[in-house]
Every structure is written in structure tokens, then in C-alpha cells.
Image (cartoon, rainbow, N blue to C red; front, side, top):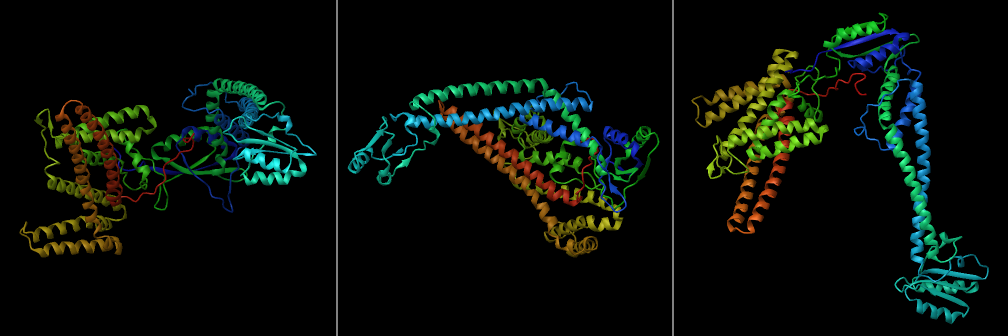
Length: 617
């Protein structure tokens, strides 16, 4: 097991530009150097990208657009296509695929636009087909005006227009619900007829799209439907061609994209280097265990024409962190990613979290039956959602802890009795609530002080007395407070002044270690410990809710008959909800107890994760 991040060494690699390309390629393959980006200075400029960077970038942009357009999912492709690493071959292939897809996509866009327009025109004509008027009637006239739209009372309008003039024609929709009319009249009566229509809340019907159409609306609808069918067939044909390209070139494109990303990363690497006209300098961090290997391979690649200078990290260096946890505790790095990584010289809390997080979770959920259900659920989800494996592994460990505490508490789906037999238990959460509270606070004392002891070893690098004053003073403070309380309660035969003396000593040590900040935060240690009372509260809430569900269900069972179905339904729904709440609550509160009460006692974090050149692709 590892309690601290992997040891790092700073490397400075210097050499002539003639070997830079080979050095970059080897560094990319080794994947062990965390490059420190060079900041431009007066004497040494930033390097320029390799010559092929523009070509690679252009190919990658084209390829990414094709993959997005064809909706090629990387996990759907086997990604085992044989692909030449020839730049010319990749460029020509990508260009051909891109041209074919671009041409088909452009055609598809036009066809889809025409289909949309055709559907809109059919929709407009559907509203117009009940009007007994030929579409060519709606042309431009010198002596004739016409109006088309919806009205409330077409008979009243016809009467008013007839009182104005007898030179007009009014056509009404054969569907009486539509109230669609078309009025043709002499042009000198246009304004007066329009005023009559407005008085009836006339709503104009847009017929501008009917220009050039002949015959009835039904004739045009039939014509447009035929056009729409042709367009849809053309769309399906193009989609089939795009699908054929996807099936033929999908694996190739995924492989080519991966290769191009590697090439681009290598081509743009000099932008992270310092460079002169003839030489380059690259700085970075490498794990100490890989130092000799990287030196040997780089020297061999550059034919001993480079100089490698190594340095141990000092206090001013911001060293990237590479955690080194076993496969058992590694999933708990997920929780650190949500919080922050420890500094290079701090203890890695991953293993400690592996030990305590599931225990706190299990203590709160603490039901044998619930533990079996969540274990099966999270194991199933792990198979279905491999990307969530770290989180689901944490929950699997927590479920095992839940089963363990369920046996200690003698609980099975909220009941302490199974098939008429009382389950053996060490502590009953339903009946020994005060004892449960004291156990929770005891866990808090152990957990918080464990963090302080780890913090003491962290601070030893700043001096032994500084570590004692800053971290162990909090333990002395708790001892003083405990002795004082026990003396006042008469539990121990110790003068009260001894407790006060130890408290005074702790306060003095705190002031020496943390200054005024330590004095201001004096009450925090006790509030941190009291915070662990939530272990009792959440556990008690879970078991009581389970008991309520059981009691109501058994009432239905006692009535017999169809009520048994309601009882079973209530059991399933009630316990499902309780398991959901019992999983979410303990997870969040376990997280809080670690982030706030535990982690803050021994590490500050803020480090950058070790990200070696070449590993991202």
C-alpha cells in the first residue's frame, strides 16, 4: 500500500533541432514525461510546430466533422481497421471521404428543405381545398380586386357587399366550419369592401405561395404529394449512400482519428518547448522509478546527442501528483477527483478513505437485506455501465459493509425477527438509541483524531515542534475537555484544575502552531465530533421508516384475501423508496464527513494530476 504519491524528478532535456523530431516521438511512445510548458522570455523563444502540423490539423478537422455528421460512435466500432501510417495515404483517403460526404450532405440538405417546403404548401392547400375556385383565378388584374380569408358570418358579408354593388362574386367554403371565403369585385370598390370585411374580423389567408398553380387545390395537393414522394425516395437513397460510407469506412475513420491525434500532439509539442535557431529545451517531471529507463532510451534515440539534467523537487516546485494505489483502493481516487488531489509531500488519503468510507456508509444503512439488494444492484450496473466502475466499486464495498453492520444490528429489511426467530445482534438500533449515539460520537473521536495524527506526520517536514503544536495540540485540547467534564461529573477522582491546566496548555500550543486562527477555530474540533451524530440519526431514520412499512404491510396481510396483494405492493414500494433514500443519504453524509471532518485535518491539496505526454491520446 502507498501512503504518499509517487516520487518525481525534474528533467531538462537539451539537444540540437536535428534530433528533436525523434526525441518527441520517443517521449510520446514512453508516456512518462509530464511536460512543463515553456513561457516566452527575452532570450529564449517558444518553439515552432513541426512542418506537417497544418496538414495533420486539417485532416483531423475534416475527419472529426465526418465522424460527427455520420454519427459514428467510437464504442460501436471495433477499431481494428488496418491503416497505413503514410501521411499521403491518410490525406488522400480523408479528402476523398470528406468530398463524398460533403457532396451528399449538401444534396441531402437541399432535398430536406424542399420536402419541408412541399409539406408546408400541402398544409396550406388542405385549408383551401373546400373553396370552389380554380387556383389560376388568383392572378393580377387591372380592373378586378379579390380578397381571401376567414370571416365569422359570410351571409351577412354577402348582404352588405350586395348593398354596395351588384358587380361581385363571393365563393364560400363547402365546409361550413371553415368560414373561408373568396370575394371578387370591381377594383374601385376595393377599400369599401375591405372595410366591410374588417368589421367582421376578417383574417386574410396568404395565397402568395399559390402563384403559378392551376386547377383546383386538390389537383395541386396530389401533384405536391407526388413530388414529396420523389423527394423522400431521393432522401432515402442519399441516406443509404451515407450509411454505406459509414459501414465501409467507420472503423478506418476511428483508427485514423486516433492516429492523427497522436501525430498532431507530436507536431505541436515544440510549442511547449524553449527553442533557438539550432537547439531546443524541454522540461518536465518523470516518475523516479522510470528515470534510468527514459534516459537510456532517449540517449539511444538521439544517438547520445542530447544532454539530460535531473533535479530533485524543492519546496517551490509545483510537482504533479501520480497516485500509486492498489486495484482494491484505486476506485476511491474518484472521490479525490471530486475534492482535490494531495500535494506532492502530503499523505494520499485514498487508502484511508477505502478503509473508512464504506464503514460509515454501512453503519448508517446497516441492514442485511438492504445490503444484499444494493450489492446485487451495483454489481449488475457495473456490468452494464463500465464507465461508472470506480463509483460503482465504491458502492459495492459500501454494500458489503452494510451487510456486515446489518448482522451486527440484527436487521433484515427493518425487522429484528425473521420467520419467528429473533436475529442475534450486538446493538439494536431501534431500542438502544442512546448507546447508538455514543457509539457514533466515539467513531467521530477516532476518525477526527486519526486525521490529526496523519496531519502530524505531514507537518513533520516543517519541524517536529511545529507539527506537535499545530496538530497534536487539538488532541491535548480534547483530553483536557474530557478530564474537565469527568471531574465535574464526579466520574474520576481528579482535581478540576488539572483539566483547566491541560486546556490552557493546549490553547498555548495552538497559538504557537496556528496563531490567532487556531484560537478562533477552538470550538470547531467539538462541532466536528458532534457532526458524527448523523451516523445515528440517518441510521435510526432508515430503520424506523422500514418498521413503518412492515407494520402497515402486515395489517393488510391480517385482513387476508385481496388485501395481501396491497400488502406485498406496499412492502416492495416502501422498501424500494427506503433503499433509495438509504443509499443516497449515507453516501452524501459519508462524503461530507470525509471532506469536512477528516480531510481538513491532514491535507490541503490543490496539486495537478500527473499527465504524461502521449497519454491523453
